[in-house]
Length: 125
Image 1 (tube, rainbow, N blue to C red):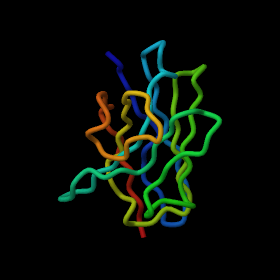
Image 2 (image 1 turned 90 degrees about the vertical axis):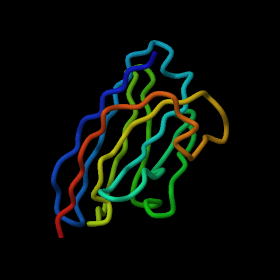
Image 3 (image 1 turned 60 degrees about the horizontal axis):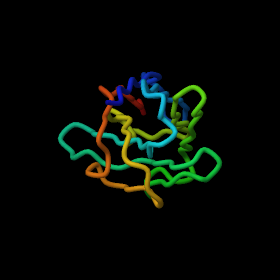
């Protein structure tokens, strides 16, 4: 059972940056695909980014590509989401997720078995 804890959310002005972190409890953290999803009020949860190996590029939704960067530090059991040039439409609860290792990574929530509690990101315009 993998436990995930997100941190780093908050309120930021449009155009600003935030970095989310997700710490995992499992020593086999490196054997999981890691993903970030988000859910805005009244909307379904949507894929944001995923990463398989720390030395390979991540995968992104079109809405965040070129603005967000996913990375992982397996020694620290942590995955990060660097968010730049934030827009009001990025406002949502952001969730970290872990799923079975596969390449390319699954970009739907069904491919992930473990989820964090979420962290709120609010972008003010």
